[in-house]
Image (cartoon, rainbow, N blue to C red; front, top):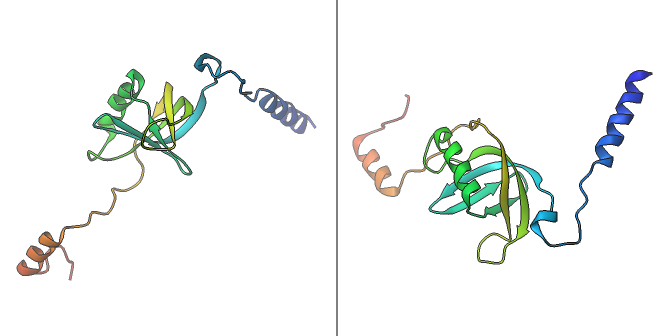
Length: 139
């Protein structure tokens, strides 16, 4: 009897604490959203990619700080690293992604869990490989 009652109370608390967006357009009035995705910063262009979204990242001190935390976990230069941030999603007024995110807080950074992506050799390297034999094949 106590468990269902406790579950109902916890559920009510969670739903009653849901953030309401104000009608004001001021950043100080907009609540940050918790966002999970993969982050990369290359040549002053940042991207945050999730399961069903891709945001450009507003490049500021927080974006550079996140890049510093991500860098040691990258296996290769263009690896995206899983992160959890709090940020404000805004429409993009410039070229690029339709929406951008302004990072307000870095919640966490974790190691990539997937294997490295498949590498495709150029036709030049394939031609060299075929001339020298069946290198890389286990017969």
